[in-house]
Amino acid sequence: MKDRVSIDLKDGVADVRLIRADKMNALDHAMFEGIIEAGAKLAAMPGLRCVVLSGEGKAFCAGLDMGSFAAMKQDGVPGVRDLTKRTHGIANRPQQCAWLWRELPVPVIAAVHGVAFGGGFQIALGPDIRYATADARFSVMEIKWGLVPDLAGTQLMRHLAREDVVRELTYTGRIFNGVEAQQMGFVTRVVDDPRAAALETAKEIASKSPDAIRANKRLLNAAVAVDAAAGLMMESVEQQKLIGSPNQVEAIMSNLQKRAANYKD
Image 1 (spheres, helix red, strand yellow):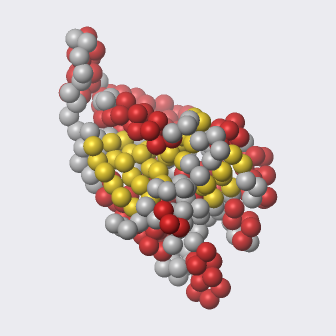
Image 2 (cartoon, one colour):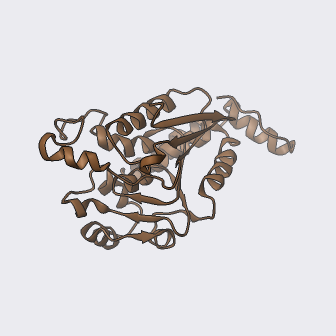
């Protein structure tokens, strides 16, 4: 992991960076493994309250490494013999690189600059929130190589943009910028410095009750998959657990006393 992904935890915020800058953080076998390993470390990390995901160098992630395309002709996807095998819950190994950000119990913010093509675009869709520069470039580029977006792309795109928009981008592979991405629903905010903005938002999230933040993520993740009756019951169950809990009492007292809260993880 250490030569592909770095993690720096400070005040509850994990600053996660793709660090294959010389290759625009392209996805080779080692990068897939590094991202999955990073996700496992984050899931078990004490005191974690928010994650910021970004890429070093000129790009967020340029997608699948060209060497991996060459290997496909003979051996299929590097490191994966059978894509239908579920290796991580409902996902296979490549899908987990994007899906894991959704499954982390805390909010994740992607900070996108340069390009997010193909698999890089799909990885950017896994987080809860996305900040990007106006001139960042995005593409569902798999069609260029005769493939489909299979890093959970179809499952992630459909909740962010209209169906016809998702279909157009998937069928054509056309490149679009950060401004258009925001208009479509793929980008939350267009900013000059996505990583700085993401770290600032993460700091604010980390200042809230970690119990309430995690409960909110569970509810919002479930909202797209369950019916209204189940969703309403989940709200009630989560709220009942929070009311009167130590961190909820601390939220009340810190606001009444106009001081910074001291939450327990």
